[in-house]
Image 1 (cartoon, one colour):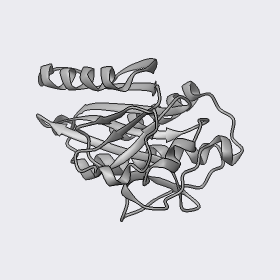
Image 2 (spheres, one colour; image 1 turned 180 degrees about the vertical axis):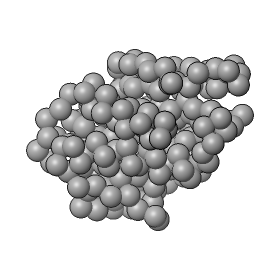
Image 3 (cartoon, rainbow, N blue to C red; image 1 turned 90 degrees about the horizontal axis):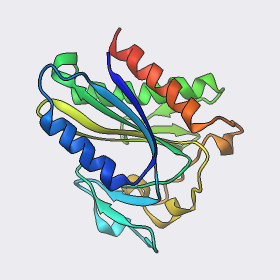
Image 4 (tube, one colour; image 1 turned 120 degrees about the vertical axis):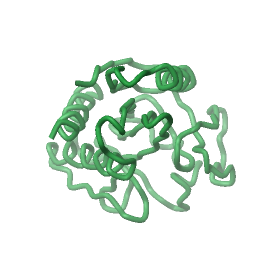
Length: 201
């Protein structure tokens, strides 16, 4: 059973380094962990991230991360779930993990009456062609870190200054704009429940 940690509002860089350290130091016996967190405003570029997708960062910090994917934004009011999993022990591959995380977000949104879908051409979760959930992962030593982000009730304006996930003109949305009022902590509980259920079935 995974250890669940609720970390509150944190700086991206410190949590990222903690994930790297956890993954580096873990053994075959180390229990998996799932961390829920919100971040202070930050743009992150994935390993393949092209700076031309960063249109105007303004005074928001930009961090070159080691996750997959392009550029995204994190800020307060966005749920971030980091999945520190031994995927070899769980007998799943990275594609299956991406699908599992997408499904966890889709299931949670359905509980709130929101119909969301995944897309084969662009990982993540979409409502009416607007992105509401993103996924970026890294695998090391057969273990995953990084994870997903789900827009709940945040300032979406910083997304206007990037080509979100490398797609020009891709719009974003959030639960609050779809008429759903739920605390990010409550949202975290639902998403984590969906992840752990999927991992144990």
